[in-house]
Image (cartoon, rainbow, N blue to C red; front, side, top):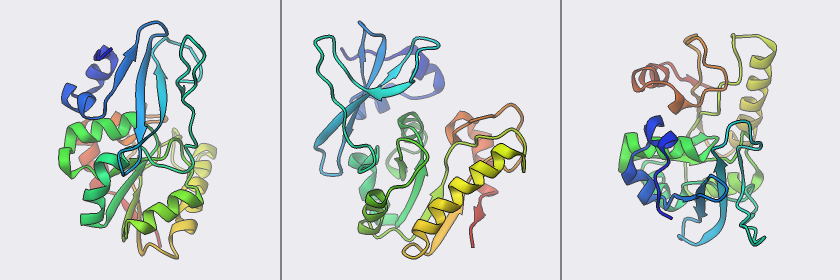
Length: 213
C-alpha cells in the first residue's frame, strides 16, 4: 500500500518525494519498499528498509511472504537514475552518496536540481564508472558517509582509503573530483550521511568541500 512511514517523514523526506520515487510500505514485515529503476525508467529490482529496531540488515532485497525475491545486481546501477540523470547530463555534475534515503532527502531539498546518485554502499564499480562516463560528467562530488569520530583516527584512515580508491578509478576520465565530508568537526556525527546534518550544517560542509588533486 501507498503509506508514508513516519520515520522518513520525521527525517525530512516529503510526501511529494515519496510519491515521485514510488515508495511503498509492506505492513506484514514492517518494511519500507524502495523500487529501483534504470535511467530508461525500467524496473530492475526492489529493496527494502527494515523499520524494526535491531533487525539486520537495514537494507536488503525485497522477499515477499510467498517467497518471491526482487534481488538485482546493485553493482551495475545507481539509485535515482530515472529522475536525476537528465539534470546530471545538463550540468555535467554528480553527487555520489551511499543510500537511497540520502537521494530522497536531496530530492526534497533540491527538487529538479537534484544531481545525487545512490551507490548502494560506499564502493564504485567499473560498471558504474562507465555509466558516469556515458553521462559525460566532468565534476563528481564524493559524499559517502563520514564513518569516523575524529579526524586522522583509524576510522578516518579507512574513510580516506575509500575516497582515494574512488578517485583513482575516476580521475583518468573525470577532471574535477571533490570530497564532501565532516571536515568541520561536528560532534556526534558518526556514520552521518550528508542529509543527516541540518540544512545549515549541510550548507557549511558544502562550502568547505575539498578538491582532490
